[in-house]
Image 1 (cartoon, rainbow over the protein chains, first blue to last red):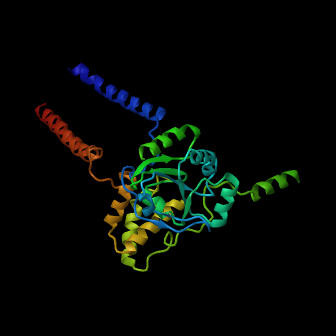
Image 2: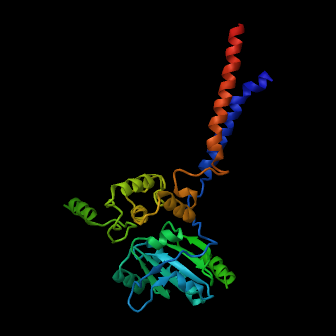
Image 3: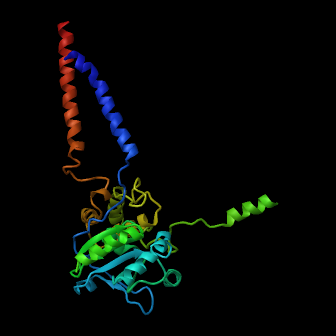
Length: 175
Length: 136
């Protein structure tokens, strides 16, 4: 018993060492995910960002058709990188709305002229109010919303080619 | 000369910042007119996590998103919401992670219980060793 007790501090040390080593080699995921997935969209109404393109309001998401909400900005570099995938999603029949974070009409117009315009509607969110209401912690982020206004999926970061099937599946499931 | 021109070029170039061109939100850096409400907002801002800088509170951070969160806290408190309500609103969106004062739950229980257990253990060890000394 005594002898075993002598080894106890060493065992504790070895355990701590293993814990720290695991933490170093497999760092925890620090992505901030939204807790709104599975919940109805919060009430909001954003004015249009560009003339000739309507704004975005939560009541529009009750018409029985799933949609993708893309939270983006013209000053965000990964948003430009995902433009091609958004275009592809649009060509595959996904309706995409955008919430433009802290942006101006001319800057958004310039961004769309340069990278293409896959959006049905663009809402102007100058103080990130709707972004915060959605539980989004950055740009770009995308949310699949079903026809009853329930958030079905959150995608954090740019949409890459291998993320497209996951988003399509979520849209399909929300129909 | 070449070197000076090079340095000038570096000085004149603008860094590729992930920041917008808009000024900070209206209430991001402006105190509320009611000092009582402002004090409540300040206390809450110190215990809310900046989501893009993660080690800082939104009161300490210069990030644009932290500014927008400060504006949100001030706006809601000015509208008459209690700090607890605002905190709950944010927890409903970002989870307990958003606050530096997480509520008691299965995951945080060890943090509260462990010190009590350790003090108890310490007392027991102290008792046993003091007893031994007396006998000797």
